[in-house]
Amino acid sequence: MKPDWAVENLQTIRTLMERSAIYRRALAPIMIFAGLLGVAAAALGLLCHLDSLRAFISFWLGVAVIAVAGAFFIARRQALKEKEAFWSPPTRRVAQALLPPLLAGMSLGTLPAFTSGPDELTMIVTPVWILFYGCALHAAGFFMPRGIKLFGWFFIASGCLLSYALMAGLLHGKFSAHWVMGFFFGALHLTYGAYLYLTERKNPVT
Image 1 (cartoon, rainbow, N blue to C red):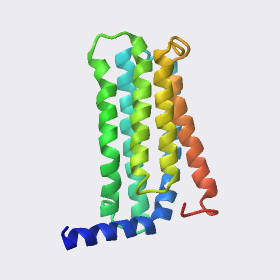
Image 2: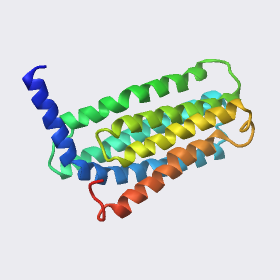
Image 3: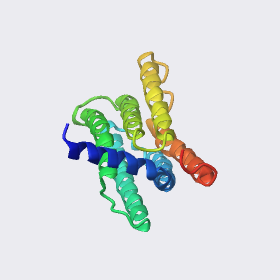
Image 4: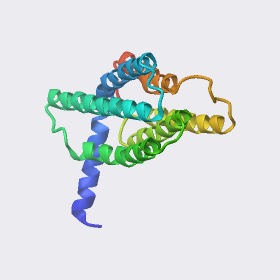
């Protein structure tokens, strides 16, 4: 083990621990932004009847791009406010933890769009995105407040349960996949963001 490498990792861990409160403050507006976007997107998808497989996937991928761009902007603004470098070693660690499951989920989720599969496959794509998004949150939770890991576990468990329910035929034709996306990527993010905002002063470093 190279001494420089060990020193850099120790410094990164120390910095992450020191910045836990800052990350927590940044998470609240990011979650609220993502939640509002998710609810609005679900409503728009239902209103415009974007129910075909290709339209559903294209629409929600576009929403994901907007969500990532918005989160980037909010996190960068927070870093500038704290007079810190945005693309720091701790930030790189969080990005490296998030990237593999997000890319895997995006790849598997977009694959049906290039096939001539039935529109009912939208309910297959949805738990895949939920599951891999949960894996991304859980991975990032090792470098961020512990609540993120629990939030990730909820998505992972829900993605698995939805998959089993679909295979058992319990959800076939019950409701639109936009409702599921709106709940998980909209309502849940709003709830978690509100929780972070309301408990920030009481418990700023959890």
